[in-house]
Image (cartoon, rainbow, N blue to C red; front, side):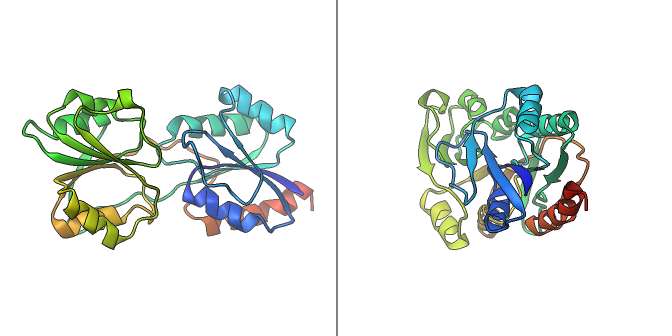
Length: 253
């Protein structure tokens, strides 16, 4: 069997694991960073936690005799992506990156492209606004500097209390989200502006459609620069093709 490590935490990683769970050609292990306290349990063996940098990941690949690695981490996990590229090269393991396409503004959207969380906080302006934050739980500190706004924070896990802005409400929820539910939420909490990362993907895109239909401003945090992989694909189907093409190579056929 071909030993495969999937760096997970995304819908692409889950989709890939779901297909490979019944594929006897692969001995698959999924790795979660541990940021989400209760990740969705995949149908393949998995581990949770970091590796200890590039050297730790390279040693993990060598010690586990892995043949292939697929990096299906979040588009904003820039450091993990750099570590994966360096570790795969050091361990002599073939690496594939799954690069989820970014969202692109459509007619009717009112987006402002923002470079960082600090810039997003400043872009909210002075007068109090009702802000929906869908940025996860790690990037809230910037909004503590503009406490005049009311924030509704939606994340999978509740953020640490010390990270919260002064005036906020919490919603714990995990996508995918339906457009009907997003429209109902936006109206119910009277959202004035949405702050989100350009994560891409269909699971959370309905919030952008809801903002478009309601004429709301969206502050869109730009992705960090993407490292250069040996090979990159945009979908699970393309990743499966890559894996199939590498089975014969690993086996020496």
